[in-house]
Image (cartoon, rainbow, N blue to C red):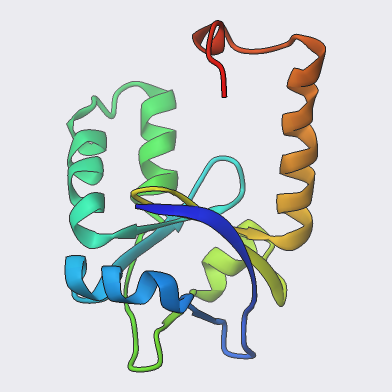
Length: 148
């Protein structure tokens, strides 16, 4: 289970050092084989390969005749990259995915249960700022009655 956020830096080649607290789990569960893809929120999604496979299968099972579904398939599956963690625990983020998500040197890796989101630090800050809009009672109906 991945949770919490970590501020990191991409190196000059676009490599991301996976924090040590996640490396052992990634090596044990997927041999360091990871899938990185685009998310409609303009961040990147990072999945252990075994977690990714049923998602890709499910997305491919939907009819591509629906333009909205086809667009989502293009975005998520069409941008998916297989990467492998190197001996130093780093993964290479492709230039096209870095550009899509607007990643600069400073990034945030946010655990989201079975996957990670990778944000440019400024984008992450804006996303967190937007999340505070719920304080005005504007919460989705699915969250009504939910308490922390």
